[in-house]
Image (cartoon, rainbow, N blue to C red; front, side, top):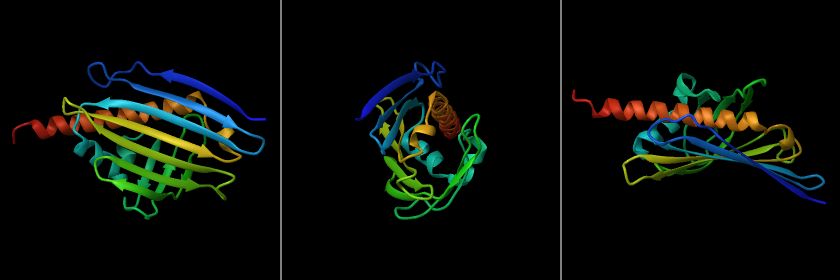
Length: 183
């Protein structure tokens, strides 16, 4: 009746010493239900405060984010934001997800649907973990449910998430470096 498939991909493109972005996706399906889960993480050479600032500055996404090329709105629980995602090799998709969780410097989550949740619902979660060296581990995860889920996620999707992770890491690290320079 139901089945599960799991695939893993890892990028070797470091953003700092020994840092890389790693991701995997899982597919679970029953007759009418499909869920895909994307899980990626990266170690960033910047404190959670700076990573959070980059992550929540939606208006600047077009400057650095190769996956979500535009975003706007207020990052507050219950607020609706507007985003445009441009997956590699696919047409851009615009959504207006609702922010469902905001824990400053720790966690941001939003949920978006297309037409109806049974057709397509995506829950995107960012979690920031402080590291002992002053850096941050960023978890960038998404769970996609609905009849269209099986057509949305593939190996290219993982590469898109890893590219976003690396771009965010580069921007945050350069901001951290600039902050350390004497005035």
